[in-house]
Image (cartoon, rainbow over all chains, first blue to last red; front, top):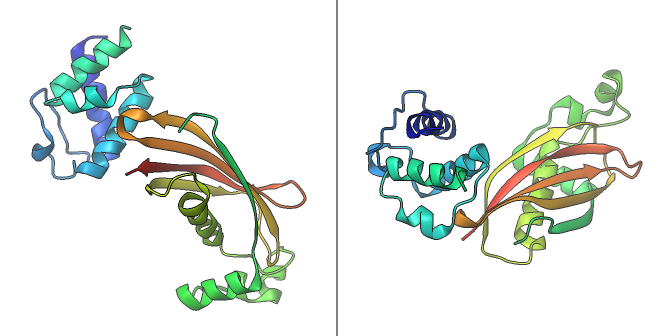
Length: 81
Length: 129
């Protein structure tokens, strides 16, 4: 799996969790870019991502992600472990 | 919280709960409020509101977990069999998924009646705040 495939899957998760089919995330996307992405939906996004990719992040990893691209890199890193 | 942590509890759908639910939410659908209507539809008696079980779920999260800093993120419940007035339900829940990164836990739960029939089951995700 490459970063583009991860990003594509993450985009589907964002649409599903945030219940908005018009959402398009790119590597530079951050929470302020998406109206529905608040502190509570952030938890739901992380839960859905961890469940989908069968991975677990640490709280430190989550806090270190500056944007969706870094999150995807984190997913790839976890998948490869 | 660790995966596998479990809770069991017995609940009874009492007259006070049933009448209180109707008084507060005003759902007097004949399936819930009219004995003869419920029997005509094939049930033994008036069917209790499914969301009374939601109240028991609230009690589980708010009072039966070993911590008080909890909120419900989401829940889904499937109703399998009718619940009648004064039924005693055995509730069980087990931590099935733990997400330490965001302090979230998903419990699988079920309610069984005294005949050991599953009347409802589902999942509830809580967050530790």
